[in-house]
Length: 135
Image 1 (cartoon, helix red, strand yellow):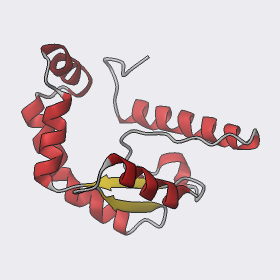
Image 2: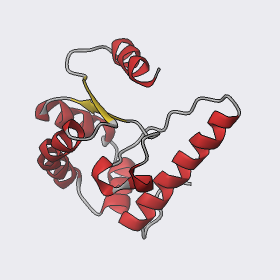
Image 3: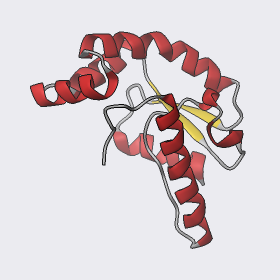
């Protein structure tokens, strides 16, 4: 399905709430659900219910920059980023890095949010830390 060309904050919140509702339904059937993506806990997603858990997979600015560059290597991926965000890779990196400190502060002050430092951690260790948070 992906991100529509007219995606905005309202669409993002609606989609996030859809996936959270799906996760709640799955709980009733003894199914665990992990939803991966970017969501700002400060946007009041789903009326700030306590059953939602946010995890910020944090890293330093240079690592974030390198990870984003790694995701947008092809012309097709760069065009898709431009379509969904309206930004070039360079601008997307700048915006992410400039918002990172704000997001860290939001997470530090939100009881539903944990911060996992991913610097110098292999994926297996990060996965284990995530499991500790959600268990």
